[in-house]
Image (cartoon, rainbow, N blue to C red; front, top):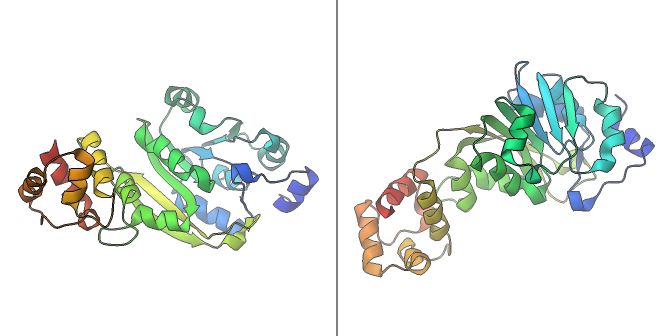
Length: 271
């Protein structure tokens, strides 16, 4: 395949900031992301934001079939050039966030893996579109902003630990597979990236209570958990301290000091 920058010029394509378009230009990186995802010949892949189709082509070499959802219809001539010759790729020009879950399953119809070089502005919405709906999802391998990746994998008692860490880790086992320099994209973004692989776990019971408790605990990081419980849930100090004591926690503890397991225990008592 010709150099992707040449193809973009030939098709008179200009990247659009509103879609967060930063295309991968390094062939070794494309192959590495496909390897990180663990895709094999039996796998069906849903790719979000194929862009110029460079990652799509790398995925198609390993997967049984790739469904690529692209929001920008002006990329059709570029994608026709880069992946048009592949019979195991279907490009669908739709905003994935506007595709209803049953509509997606009507297209894919079997368990699948998600792989994406995600535009930074839709990272969280896309992640939770897949994590919060009941898809037969096997894993997600996504390129995201480095700082976001660090928050996704952060452990308690660290500065990066927060709502995103627990929202992800209560649904999947997260690992950073590689860090990626901004210099490997066109146009070059302002930040470096990282590839994160999420392998779905069994989830947790009492999801609504757990999520509410986590949001409450980090409503104000400088406050103790008791104070956040009082403010966010409207309960008395006495009741909040009693709740923590029952869960075996210090009444002066802050939310960032609680592990996922301690949040689970506390949510059981809160329920």
